[in-house]
Amino acid sequence: MSTSTVNVGGLFLIEIVIIEHLLSAFMGMTLWKNKGGDPSGAFILCAILGILGVVILAIGKPGRKEIDRVARSQGLVPCPNCAELINYQARVCPYCGRDVAPATGSQL
Ligand SMILES: [Zn+2]
Image (cartoon, rainbow, N blue to C red):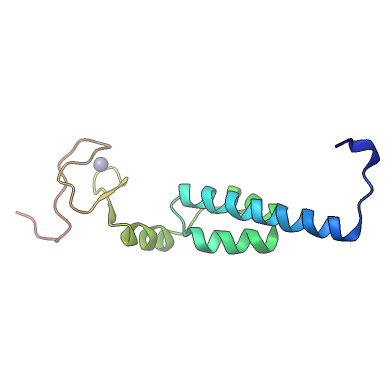
């Protein structure tokens, strides 16, 4: 526990790196998911790159296509008024409170 007398063996170092990459993978996955990105891709990136992957995801943003793909897989569509992701069956947007046309594309 004392930081002054750490004798880092090779095996111990590898364990630290594996744990660090696993933690980074979960951090990156959560971070990316919150940004609307694909969590499985973020998990793999951070598992490979470690904390560097988290930094990349923290700076970057998921592409429009990726957000749409993830959102649609969760049954979400962007609100035509405020662009927040809402349930495709919603008639009133919970974010801006305006009426939303059903996602069938038919409008009066
Ligand atoms: Zn809205």
